[in-house]
Structure formats: structure tokens, C-alpha cells
Length: 165
Length: 244
Image (cartoon, rainbow over all chains, first blue to last red; front, side, top):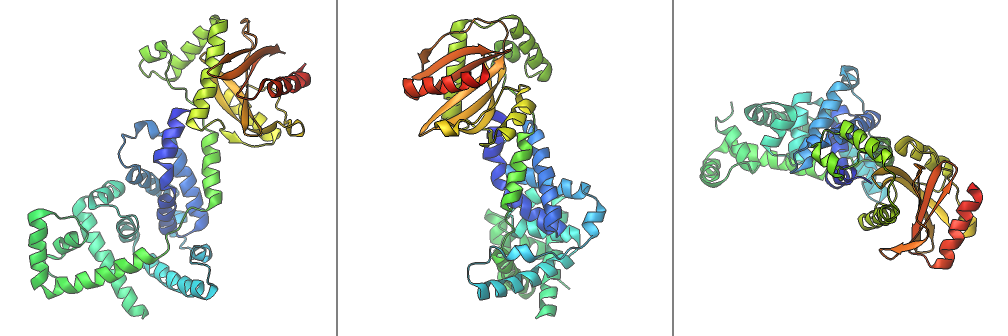
């Protein structure tokens, strides 16, 4: 195996789960997320010589987001609710798993109601632990915009939770 | 109507502030009911989001990604001095390097050293296999696509040598197809590259590995392993019998 492939597997491949998670929340479809991530990993590999080192995660997530954008508005507007496979990691107890699945489905539906711009900053911050600076880089927006979108996303989601309960 | 310090409070809650700024935000949070309400709700929300199962990449996706990476052309690292001198001029330098090497059949000593080095390098890195398969119908086209070489690929599992996969490597600066076999705890690499008229060494030891060379058809072959002499000769016999 060549050195480049080895470095890619050591630095970028460990973030495959993060890439898939972001693609899932952006596209809301397992099949689309599959395509987006495959496309993104291939693009990342081809561009890997240009990666300057450091944390590969924000770099990879930027590529995932670009692939999602270029996957086309048709995919993005489809608005899937294919959540069946998301309960796979809920645990061995079927009853508990069902309850978990219910929570997950509601939360997922609420996040889905957020406009794309708000949804992505929330996912990047709360699930992927990206800093404001990293989110700004990934989404190509000023830090001030990241902050206001994040605040807005949180306020909106809080409203949805109140409506739902 | 929200507090004008709300974004600053949020930055504090997200761990974006340090030192005096953090202290200032904390002071404000202690006195502002709006920011306190925001903080409480944001914390609850954050808790829920972080408890939500992350969508982990399914196994089939991981496999598909690796398979697509396998299809990418292998780029050799610029080890040879003229490639280094070309300063990453990339493909053209690589092609030039190979063209030059093609004119110069490697010496016998170079070949032995080169195969032993390649085998040792692969073992050390734990990457002897780029395409893992016991199916010669998988390994053969993979080698053809990646090394541009199509040596016969046979599984000798019935005789105790199980085909486990293949990789692309270098012998004396030229691409070589490598078929990897397992024999108990031992591994044997079978190298194949186009015959360029070079004289081949016989059987020797290098780096503690047993190595032997032969020609068949329009290709040169080398087998290298740490197996004992009898098993090694048996393997070479099997390979040569199916080729000649």
C-alpha cells in the first residue's frame, strides 16, 4: 500500500462516521447519505495531497457538505423520513429500543423542520463538536453569521419541542 | 425581545470565550434573567442532541468506500533520486523515471535486495494486501487494473498455500504485481513483472527471507518468504508447474 493511502486511512478514514452523520442529517436519507459520503471520500482522497495536516475532520466535513450541495437541489428538497435504520444502535432491549426510536424520530422530525442553514450549524456544533471558527470554515460563512444562526436554530428547536410536548 | 448580550452568552456556553471575556460573560449571566433562561434551555437541548444516536456509517458503506479507494491509481512515492530531483513534477517525472529504468536492466544484486526490501516493507507496515480475496477472479482483474500486469493467479489452498490477496509493489523501481499466500502462520509473496531481459539471481537469503527468481512466459517471477526451505520449494514447484 502506498504511503498516501496509508496516511489517508490513518487521518481521514477515522472520521467516516462523522461524515456519514452529517450527510444523514443534511440529506435525511440513508441512500443519499451513502452516495454523498462515497463521493466525498473519493474527492477527499484525490485532494489529500493538498491537505495541510492538523485535524482532518473539519476538512472532510467541508467536502461532505460540498458534495451534498452538488448532489443537487432535487435530492435536497425531497424531504425524506426514512428513519428505520437509525434505531439499529439503540440497544439490545426491544422495548427500550422502541422508546428510543420514538424519541429519535420526534427529534429528527423537529431538526428536519429547521431551515438548512440553521440545521447544519446546529449539527456541526452539537453533534460534531466543531468550534465557531471551524463551522465558519466548513460553511463558508462569517463567524458572526454562524453565531446568529446557531442562536436562531436553538430558539426554533426549543419552540418545536414546546409545541410537541 | 432578547437580551443584546445573548450571542455573547451563547459563545460563553459553547466554550468559545476565555479569560477576561469569559469572566465578563459569566458576570452578565449571573444578573440577566433572559440569558439564564436561554442557558437553561440550550443546555437541555444540547443534552438531548448529544444523547441522540449518531448515525454511524454502515459496514457496507465502509466497504464501498475502501473498494473505491482501491480503484484509484497507486502513486509511487518519489524514492528514486531523479524523481526527487524533478521535485514532485509527478506523473511525467514518474514516467520518465520508469522509461529510463526500462533501458537499464537491474543488476542481480539489485533485484534480490529490491524484492527483499519490498517484502520487508510490506510486512513492517502491515499492508501486504491491498485487495483481500481468496478468489483469483477478483485478484487477477484488480492486479491488471492497478499494476497493468496480468500474471496467472491461482489458489493453491488444496496444497496448503491459500491465496489471501494481492497488492501493487515496486521491484527495482518498476511496478510489480504481488500475489499473497498464507501457509500456516507464514506468508509468501509472489512477485511478477515484465521480463526486461535482465539476468535473474538464483535462490538466496536476504533480511532473513528466502528468495528465488525464475522466468516464465514474458514475465519475471520472484517468491519470497520466511517459510522453511522444504515448504518454500514446494510452493515454488506448484507455481512453476502451473505456469510452464
